[in-house]
Length: 302
Image (cartoon, rainbow, N blue to C red; front, side):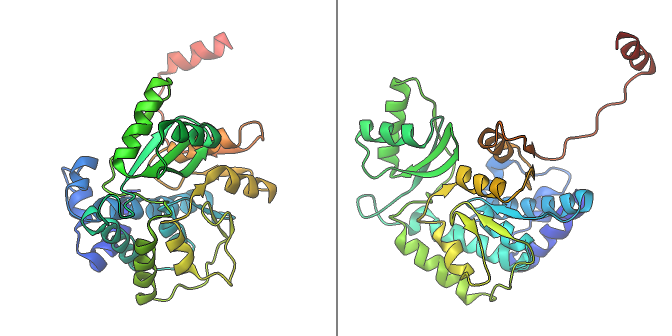
């Protein structure tokens, strides 16, 4: 895994100069808080690179996947993994997206700002009802992660009202530590800027693997305008249950998370519960060696 991370982060460093190899693969790697404070886009580039590296590791261990599922910011890594972009081109896109969404570039509150995200432990319908009870008309359901989890987006003062309403009703609402919003219809200007940035870079090639998008709600085809579709993520919701239902309908039964965490795999398992699908998160560490007497004792008990 370290070899794959080194290869990917070196390619990103060549294109962007952010120094991910030194920050993350040195003797004292940066944590999430340090990455968030390191400069615009550094944290996003670290996550993008990790996802591409995990994809390479999974291919090395399990073989080429039948399809890729792109979820939210994961669109950039998925399109890179599918061969539509080089690692460097995807990194420039990830860095450009972070710059487009920075708070000092966003409109002032009251003029279309959608500058925060909150994780809520309620499904899509319940989340919309809670937003209405809180009187937060500019808050929207930006991501449907599972039947029991959503991400809400909107102005921070209205998100705070939703969070208070959630607490009063016994629901959990946690503000995400991101300095910007996404998946919000008010981000029209930012969407246009991001699409223009993508068009100014290398033209994406045809993906060598099927890429299903949780935002588009379907598998991309050769007729898709990929810069426009990637930019859609800023203004359109991501709906993971629908994308997984489509994958299941197309016969896909084994899913692995291409990233260093397990949150997406947990959401996918919730969506696919009862279908018999096999869902796995990141590669687990090898188990510790078992003393011989313990093995023998286990055999006796069995």
